[in-house]
Length: 437
Image: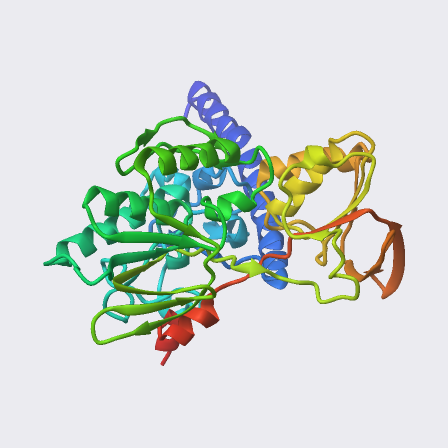
């Protein structure tokens, strides 16, 4: 090898080293960091998804990290031991952007093997439960996102319409729909479209889980089509916009809707079902359960929680100013409420969370609250729990079992909800976990 060839070879090797070494070091640091985050998430129980999630084919995955960068929720995925891995499953909402970005098609979005899922009901390809004629649509079926709820609400009623051979003349409903969120509204619109004798019932006004969200929360980021109504084609919709659309739908299509109906049970009869609520009994040939997974708000079970100043949802942050406010919880709803309240004039906002850090919140929320903490607009007490709520103060149990007393005017509790799974099991609906061998 002559000198010129040797120089060319050395330059080539040098270029490779200049490119490869920084990449290798960055890759190693990333693997180490993601492994630490995954271990911490497992310790805190934040690694397991609650809805559909990215299922990774490790034989195909090349560990490029494209999926990690594509996820707008942040910290859901990471690279561990050279492969994509779920880090914080609780933050995953299942929109599938990671799968779309993967250059080798190593990711698909789904529920996985439901035999290991105690929180997923067993459904056939038409979303019918093990009880013939009883369907489930929306997030109760395990799939998050409004577009999925709307699609399922429509598809189950289409299947019901195809199964109805003659009209009821005895006052029975063709189909009774429980839950007036996106899935229930879609089901009602489809029933209207097929001229079915239907009724939509709910404990509260239409909107479902959306109604519980804080003010100005973005609740949909992709276009979707509602039966009869048409396409919701904006890239983003706020909570208030969607609730206004729901109201328009009620008026325009004269939706048959009964409010204030808490479902107690459903009894299978020889012909159809008897649906028992706290106020009425209904009879229907088919039933669609379009309930949310959150159910009734989870209580703290501490002295003073029955005081009128304790609430489990924030309807309008602007209604509160010059107050001492405590927000309890560490999810997106709690963080968004704390941010909204901290922006109002004169408020002192404290956020109490029982874990050591935020693991379930979206990256945008994490950025906002970190900024507000740095600006001393929100005081966050990790590893703390509420001990007692009094008229003008709250006692908090902090790390080391120490007690901290803070001035307080209002308490907002965002500790999740008691899911309707016991009710569903009482009705006779089977869940995936019951198939375990």
